[in-house]
Length: 251
Image 1 (cartoon, rainbow, N blue to C red):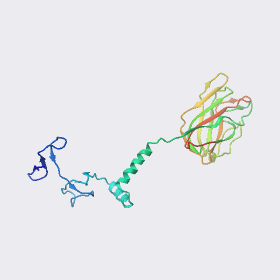
Image 2 (image 1 turned 120 degrees about the horizontal axis):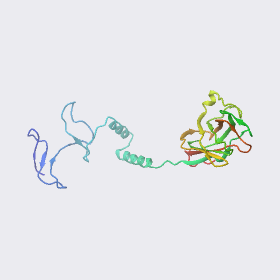
Image 3 (image 1 turned 90 degrees about the horizontal axis):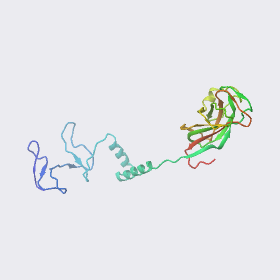
Image 4 (image 1 turned 30 degrees about the horizontal axis):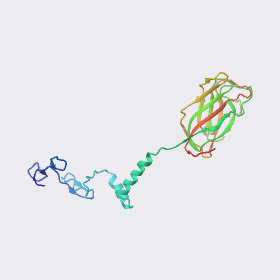
C-alpha cells in the first residue's frame, strides 16, 4: 500500500490509504508499536508515547489490579487461556439453579401436646408443653398452618427455639429467662382464621426465616393470646412447611 505521510505539523504520523480496504472503506492508516507485554513506552509522566498492541492486535487497557493478578496467576502456571476456561466454567456453574426441597414438619398435623381438657387459658399463658420437632439441619421456614378444631378463632403463637428451655407449666403465664429467650429464633402468630363452620384454619405465608439446627431438631411452645377454653379432644393442631437446603433430606 502506498500513501502520503500526514501529521498536524507536516511530519509523518500516519498514511492516507489510496486503495480501498477489504470492506471497501477508506481512511487514515494508523501505526502502533507491537509490545507483547503491557508497558508504558515513556520515561516519565507527561511525555508523549505511542499506543501499543500485542501480536494479535489487542490494545491493553490498564487497570490498577488486573496486571498484578495476572502476574501472580502466571507465577503459579495459570495461563490466560486456562483462566478463560475457568471463567467460562464459573459462568456455567452460576447458571445452574440451586435446588431445595419443601417438607412439612411434622409429616401430618401435630397436636399441641399437654393442653388441659376444658381448661381456660388467659392471655399470655403457655398452652401445653414444649414439643420437639424433627427438621432439616438448615433451611428456610416458609409457612405455618394451625387447625382450630374447637372453633375458638383466637390468636395462638407458635414460638420456635433452637434448644430445649425451662418453661412455665401448662396454663401458666409465660415468663422466660434471658437464656431461654436467646434460644428463640422465630415467633409465628396465628391470628387470622378462615371459618369452616365447626372449625377454623389459620395460615401464615412467606415467613422467610432462615435457620440452622445442627442436631436436626427444634422446639416448639404454644402461647395463648386472648382467652381460650379448649374442649376435650379438640386440641389445636399445627404444621410447619420448610424449604430444606438439602434436597435429599429424609425423616
